[in-house]
Length: 498
Ligand code: BES
Ligand code: ZN
Ligand code: ZN
Image 1 (cartoon, rainbow, N blue to C red):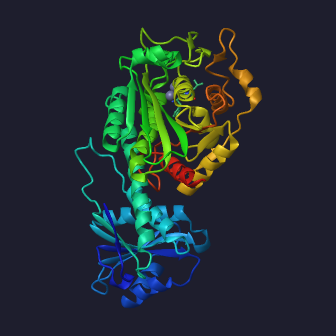
Image 2 (tube, rainbow, N blue to C red):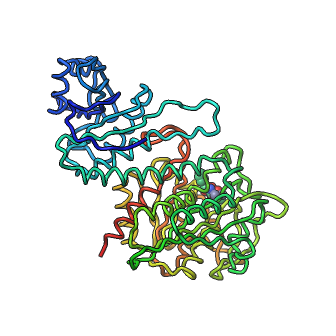
Image 3 (cartoon, helix red, strand yellow):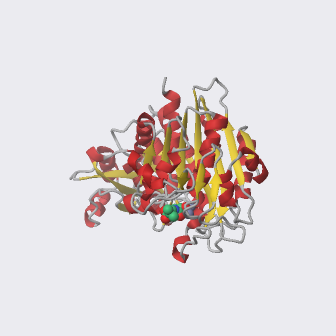
């Protein structure tokens, strides 16, 4: 879908569908929409009334203009109450409107800058994100593809005065949505295709296209580095592990050095502590953190931020076999910590432990952010629409939470209660990799915290949000690409900070 700006009034806008916004609890149409209604001799207001259009978020009513206007149809999309309108309302309205326009067979769609009162750049970005995320599909393995697609979205700028801001917003929206869809594709691809080797190839391609540095460590390299926790997980699989280190170095001097780490289990069977059939069904999504990291690293050259960003992924499968790690085994992580394997299905924290220890020792970043489909306990706590946030540094967590809010991704803080460290005690090693069932997301976070040392660190548990089993306002069933927009927003904000 091509994005463009059109400096003309709504009355002059062309296209197969012209999208405008409608507010709830307002008896009259907004002035610009009322002008369209007059041109249509009251048809629009009549249909709005007859269809009981109340301006509720994402509600839709439309009319054929039959020559009354240059646009072939006018589609009104609900934005809810005027004073409640924010970027997320605009995203969802744009997504709903574009899906409907697509299903109507529209090729060219004109759209008003939805959400009066928002800065034009914010509206434009939200509009582009909503349109592109809402139209996402994954059908490359299906004979029957959705042939309908909108080719061009034209944002109408009646005053023609906001062109620069709208252009900036559209560019960012396109970038954010493109990155999110890149992550979605990687998650939706099955585990027989997305292996650790495949992730390494994707990283190499990203490096080549964007002039990033890339280093891929194979099993022997990881052994030399002392990544016993990571390799213990990898030893049960026929697929060779790949530890991925991507680096973005800005042209100008970097203000800060940030490491982002993604859990990269390309399939989680549970290992010898085998999952149930149902528990395994969606475990191709256990590399969603890695997908987000790759998507973010891929976007950095276009953003050109004055930050040095390191993307780290300890990619492996978690499989049961004659060579698999056993419950009761003891492994030694890169930082020397010994770990008793209480459960082979708590593998993510083992791979992340070595990735974090590697970051601290080899990268020495000012901060570490990890994204991981880490625990089913976070799903119990927060469900499928909210990710969990844990940290060893409150100011850093506050900045990430603020970025999540701006990006429209729900994230909520959880406490890493010091006393719970007791729950990870082992009789034979420094740590056990599991605690009791209660507080499972927190003990996982506390386990990870041990490997951050004194580096400020934030952990995002995306186990509930990385994959959706029902269609959502901003995307269909499957991988969601969660975390990408939050961290891109975060990095942009960091770049602006003194
Ligand atoms: N990958 C899973 C967590 C998960 C569960 C992600 C559901 C997405 C949806 C993780 O490796 C795991 O199996 N965790 C176990 C840990 C337990 C054995 C301590 C869990 O949370 O059940
Ligand atoms: Zn697991
Ligand atoms: Zn897992």
